[in-house]
Length: 225
Image (spheres, rainbow, N blue to C red):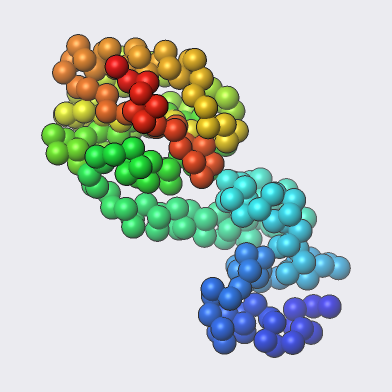
């Protein structure tokens, strides 16, 4: 059965117009973006299979358009459309927090950092620069590595902090595996950056690890001296 053969109230576009977008499932919303299915499979069945194969919407959002083109029925135009929609969703989440919020607690820091790191499939290391009021003045990606690690030079972290005139910093990276535990290497790196910051008069306020929908705060776990 094609989507056009379905009851009008169950067709994704008509359902959205009559009942609102909130009434649609993830597969129905994706079907509106993709518009058409492939030979022998309508677009709704195709999006259901896609979500099932990828393990849900959260994992699908992490796919690049190149990865999406490897899926049956998704050519370049459809893949680019999906990645654009996913990026807009991330930017909406970022804009709702604001570009220069005050980060006075670990949960505020995690809310600011998570949209910037959560969906990467590789480890990415980020530094957030704060003024004396703990207001964000900027951020800088320092490195990008593999699935389980990234190489970070504490000297580069502090060089960027000095260049940005930071009064203090928060460092952050993601765990693509979803593991919410800090590693020994994470602890040693944090210690080195904190020591360098103390020498320069730019204290380290926290180290945030983003893992899936959760986070780890070194400050909350009393891992900062």
